[in-house]
Image (cartoon, rainbow, N blue to C red; front, side, top):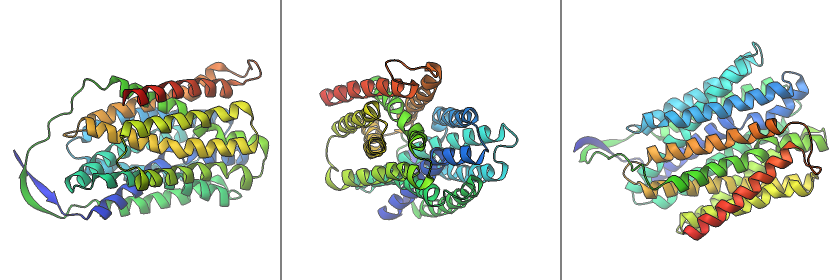
Length: 385
């Protein structure tokens, strides 16, 4: 037994804090580079090769963050606050340093990846645990709308402000991240009275390999469109007010789909929700294989964006159901698999090289592999339920 504090934060404030935290961490710390990459290429501040380095550094940092997120098992709220401050500071630093010196950008984006992974794991652990203690666990679904809202916000900023220098957009995103960190920190401050509770025991380490593998496939499956959709759209039309719209669509679809799941499917089996999301995502990754027309890329953005956060939400909630006493270690292992999968996507594109095979370039071949693996794991998750 140990003396802890019984929090009296209202449930709605916990949900808002989680939404803001994930919007900052994922919309800015993880994915802001996607809509800004075409603009940085336009400004001449990055080349395609250095852009790939920035993206790979962020993925590598995300993996490192997933590997170390269990440090905060005893106090995920503190980890959440540290991570959000880190996202804000690294984003502001990108605006200051830009691409000079050459290593500054990759180092800062790697650090942002670390802080983003910490935020996802700590926010999931803290928010879902607090809501479960209040017997309103079904409200936990709503925190994952934050990811889509953050992506949509970053995408809209890049879309509407696409004629500004990209460095100005980094500064604006850094200021937004700073404000979000303050709001989330205020919302997660405990208002408490002392009580006695049992100390949580570590979560089990066995019986979860298949779930971890499916989550890793999900990371690989979504990352090719999530990385290259705006760039593919830019090949079709050069106006940022046109090609830049794919990323806000991606984020808006993510937010609306999670909201729909929270509203109409709060009591569905998490494994079935995950299976459906993974299956629809497979359709979204398959569309650009048929045609790279703008309508196809927009539809892919909606289908992949509309399912990747539902899959994230369902997978992490399922993990918490499996190990309710202390889910942070399992959440961290699933996030490690996800991070490894998303690193594999761009690496595979680079390894496949510039050639074509039956008219398919490297992105298309990676997309085909993602489609197949997503479909297989979707079928397995559905049957396993």
